[in-house]
Image (cartoon, rainbow, N blue to C red; front, top):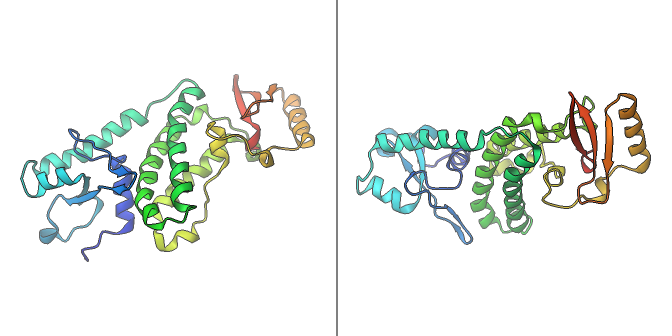
Length: 260
């Protein structure tokens, strides 16, 4: 096995870290405006194991890496436990189930917004070196988003016709997350599932693109169909995120018009 850590393993490590040093007594932010301070430490030294697997690696800040490798301030057992502790912390915080969509939105929106800023500044801005750095932050954020959305699928409007379903957008986003983590830079341009831009409007971090709104005629057809099915409650226009209210399993849910 070569010394180089595979891109896939690095992506998994970034996602696991949530963007912070894995030492629970440190947790310093690893991504800075001018780059990152990420260092990867082997639980069992590479010279003894030649093991670059996810299980044998941990993401640390430079200080904690030095304390582990050179100062023997932490044992392998300690550092192994950090990986388990971070997973438990992640599950507690991002595995929370909410009772209302607005609660979910308050947790999802900041992560989507940060991803959007990174993508627009570094990827679209053609700053490849910085994109390679901050892509790790997107991976960490995506891991959090995935857990939040999977745990709260019941709060997302769904419909048997995917054209009318917000849940279909969420499912596309989750597939995109999985592909984003597993693909490597060399096949970047060959990703099959692109980021569904409608999700940003769904969670209120950008206005609805008028080109995404349905025509008046198609909207009338949809409302008539929902009325015949006894599902239509009302429609709210004149806001950044116009929506239809409809009944689903006895509950009133929102179908955002930019997503149909």
